[in-house]
Length: 86
Image (cartoon, one colour):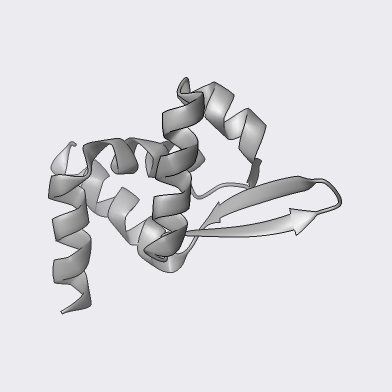
């Protein structure tokens, strides 16, 4: 049932999938660096908060920076998107 929810996100939220691909599974990104890399500051931040709300991104604050990292569900979506070619 959980995979169905992930597939629904994959189909309906193309921009969210692009954000998750940008984060990747390698390392944690500070929010500013991530949004600069994505190229969408205001809209990108809203997507980041939406991804956190859906449990796809884990955010933690260290000093004055917020670091963003994919959760297991986020990694699954990126994996499925690469297999499908989205």
